[in-house]
Image 1: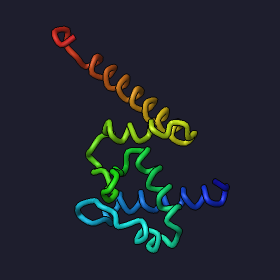
Image 2 (image 1 turned 180 degrees about the vertical axis):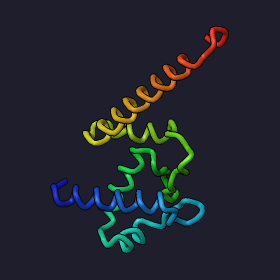
Image 3 (image 1 turned 135 degrees about the horizontal axis):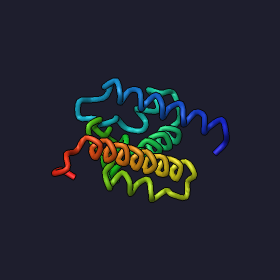
Image 4 (image 1 turned 90 degrees about the vertical axis):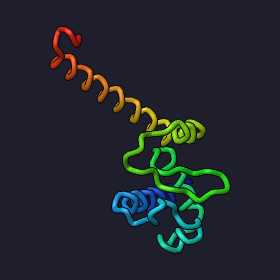
Length: 126
């Protein structure tokens, strides 16, 4: 994939992520067809497909064969299904980087949470 196409995919990925965050989707969270999305964002279907794949690797959308892609609700955590999608494409440097970042952040948050709980806990709780 050329630099120009990667930049376009990243731009469309950011636009779709923004639309998810701003609640600009159907109440079901489902996206339209790739063709409809391509018209909406004024790009080819291949660009949409790659942007959705990258969002799925980040756990922001769920892609299932034969079904429309849907956004993951903001209060849902990263599911095993989404993690599986990301691991499936672990040969992709972007996917590996995102997974490593996710696990690093998760470890950091857990350590800080545990340290805070221990600092505030009574002897009985400890």
